[in-house]
Length: 131
Picture 1 (cartoon, rainbow, N blue to C red):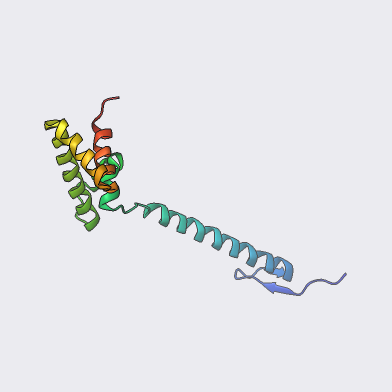
Picture 2: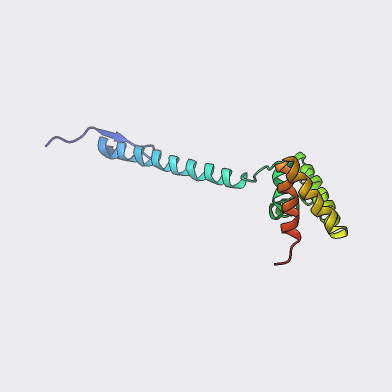
């Protein structure tokens, strides 16, 4: 049986060619795993989803979470969230002050085929209804 050609690793230790290549492969795997972990961490830490005004207005629970997240932040996205929260509060106030007029708004939106407005007004009703 013939011995493999010997190489020295960076620490001065003599290794067979097979052991040398095994160490290189192991280092490449480690670099891959470290890179994967770093990428995963980066993606998870920057995974705060940007939502549109319409999405926020139609999903009050999401709007509330985004509003809480945006407290004390001055970004374009947070400006949209704050505006949506103010507009949603105004609609809630309209429903509270005059439920019949609010119901008529829903009926008019349905008759005109304005699905976006219907979804929005139904979101207000869901958010303010006691179950």
